[in-house]
Image 1 (cartoon, rainbow, N blue to C red):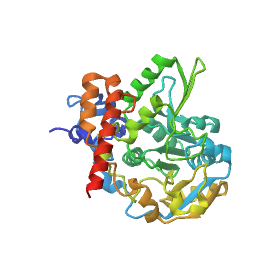
Image 2 (cartoon, rainbow, N blue to C red; image 1 turned 90 degrees about the vertical axis):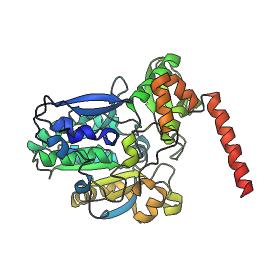
Image 3 (cartoon, one colour; image 1 turned 180 degrees about the vertical axis):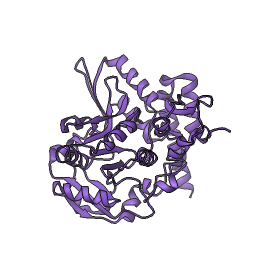
Image 4 (tube, helix red, strand yellow; image 1 turned 60 degrees about the vertical axis):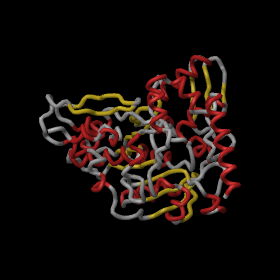
Length: 393
């Protein structure tokens, strides 16, 4: 019989829960479009079924909350410098500080490695948590974090895990199967519109370094001119060159925002709804000017959903760090569609990946972004057709 994990194919979200839970290490890691895909080695497999039981995709219906969040608020960190280091309202840092300084715990989050790979890692010092701040529009590699978290919880340590909704669902499922007391596990999920390919990111870094030399810093949301939906990218290189929102930097962002460069399972995400898996859900409060104009702030505003009693306890400990107002989740969802449904698969998705696999990165970056003449011509034609059709109506 073919293991259920091997039948997931494009539904696999790459959370690595099955890899962490397997007692005989019977899962091989394959790479498809740059994404990690676990595959059961049927000769090594003992048919224990733990991988399937742990999978958040297979078991999504029992991992999501049956009810809406307990409380929904808009929040912004009173410390402007902390907020500027973050992507929106600066919610993460005070929560992390409460776990490390107040509870002598460990925080897990996504950070850049020395080679610009995005990986989940641990921090036991609050100063180490700076690496987790700021958006990283690349799927992170969980590695063996879940096993590490299990061991820390068994030792009675406090743990804060931050990640995408599927990663949070995965750690919850993993701990349940490992029969770990999760009283000291706090989970915070980031509202997610899809995870871009690590291979496309790697190719993009290589593309930049061929032109400008060794990359020292990259920011997906440079908010020097204020918090906005523009997603202004910036990059600094060893030779001293600094780029800010150039056509080259916009290219990677466009591949993400057009959804041609996100994991295929994201189009069928089981966790794009108001029924959450984490103790606390945080994200940009898009549409703030319509939701609560008086609370709008150019330094960033977050939407915060307190989903569990554990989340409420943590929030009460850190709430003094924030300015807050109550919010209506239905109104928030109107401007933040991921609370209602997953991202929509674009018509060019398959063509993009076929071109990438056949011709490589340099071809697709020019064909599917403003870096190429072909893209600019196609865009002009599309706009012209749209204007004609609008007049005919």
